[in-house]
Amino acid sequence: MTRCSKTALGWVIATACLGAVAQTQGVERNQIVVGSITDLSGPVSAVGKPTRQGMLLRMEELNELGGVHGRKLRLVVEDSAYDPRRAVPAAQKLVNQDKVFAILGTLGTAQNVATMPVLFEKNVINFYPMAAAREMFEPAHRLKTAFMPTYFDQTRIAVPRLMQERKASKPCVLYQDDDFGLEVLRGAEAGAATLKVALVEKANYKRGATDFSSQMARLKAAGCDLVVLGTILRETVASVSDARKIAFNPVFLTSMGAYSGVTARLGGKAMDGLYATMMAEIPSADASTEQVRHWMARYRTRFNEEPSEYAAYGYHIADSFIRVLQKAGPKLDVDSFVRALETVQIPRDMFGFMEESFTPTRRLGNPYPRLSQLYDGRWRVVSDYITFNELKVQLGKDGRLTVSSEKFDRP
Image 1 (tube, helix red, strand yellow):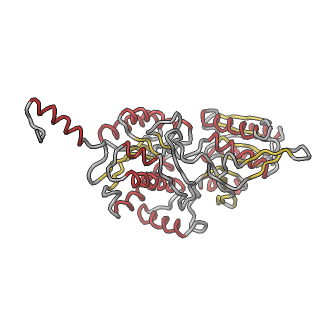
Image 2: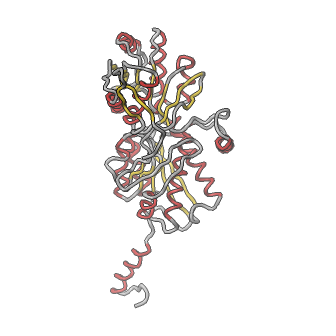
Image 3: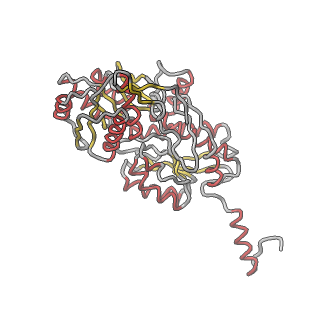
């Protein structure tokens, strides 16, 4: 028998024939359907909207050139309003109704944790979530692909670097009383411990707090000369402002969660000197490269607004996804995508995202942060990416602990 017939025996053969040519979900002859779950109407829509627009801009550029291996990208975005309870039905729609091949840039740790089981049950990839939590890549899973260093690692690496550079010896922490704040606290403890130093004081606050005067008075009384902030945007501004009011001026270090132009706009001069861990440089017409300025002009034309750092994140997410698709080749399915992911080398891009690579057991492309400092309303990058091995503890002849930096080298 040379073809699939409708006879009883032929029905069995026909079923096998259909299985042999069955398409991978979301992969069509002329397009690849992908999804995203983000905040378009909730408390962090200022992150979600530009992230979506950055992804869309990169995909439109690709489609204008004919797509990847003849297939154009179609992006379907669902609004979670930053609520995990809304993220789950959004994932179910994308997976079961829109039949997406992958979901890109889902915003929020809780949202990702809640939706990954929905994705993985249908063999759908969770690509580059907008969340800096270890659940995004641990335990290792073939459908997990992350690019943000955890808040723990950001802090663990930055604390000893700044203690050495700023000659600080009494590190302290102000942290939000939740999982995010505890990650920062533990990272600060681990970072200080590399210099055989313990945190001098710890102060916490409840999410939504607006007055930090008592916490800052407590940290000042303890003699803290470096304060790690486990804070998000508004809490960073309020806590540092309250410190300035009582002439408390230690080195302040916050995480990527507060690295934003919003911090500068809300805080004004009080924010001068604040350090933050970061990846992408905030786009700036007077500080960026010509390539970034051209990108900013394209973004303005397309969306009639200035691009933020989150637009750069979205663009990077889409560009990295496209690079893996290119390597996967024209016979695209989940297996070929995963094989390509585990051999691709994603280069440093125009925004300064570090080189990224993956293995079957390492699903985080880059575990390292760099540092930026805020002055006169503008963030300025003050370090390259700081690796785990870059910081070496040394005991000098005078018995004092110091840290030496080696030249950057990706392991």
